[in-house]
Length: 121
Image (cartoon, rainbow, N blue to C red):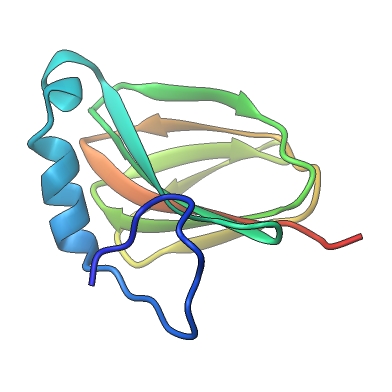
């Protein structure tokens, strides 16, 4: 079952990430640009976004006020955070604490999930 951005989360929701990546790569935006993304879930306490970057593309520094999880699905990226560079390959998971700035560069065409775990007041 494929979900849509901003849908209400039911008791269980699943995504075929390989199909989601294929759909992104089949879009005109992928052909014309160096990145594309799709928000899979966005609620008051969590946001999960699937991102794809072409080799050499970068995401400029982000500074979220929440914990951030970066789960590498395909390809390789470099993440600069906390004064260090980490290379993520498929299967790797990087967890950043609240308010940790990071930037990402694709070493090769890559797909990854970024999850923002938003604290409730």
